[in-house]
Image (cartoon, rainbow, N blue to C red; front, side, top):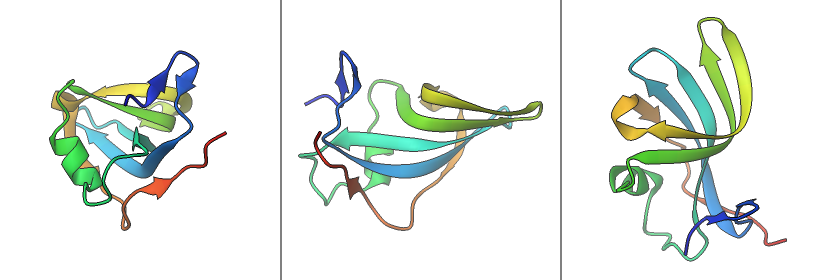
Length: 98
């Protein structure tokens, strides 16, 4: 089950807040989503480590650059451009289906 739909992100997902630091020094804070039926035993770090597509999709992102900040509804981050990631203290939060 994909978390993407034609209109955007599937509302029935689990999600967590991440802060991603790129090798360029840019920082991105946003929400990472997985399918709602993803096992609770799968941690956010497992999902990131097993990213086979080469990109992480974040929604409601804020990009912090040397020139200032900008908000993005969604952004794809190349995994090989990531320096490190601040993981959430708790795991996934479920979202309500609309």
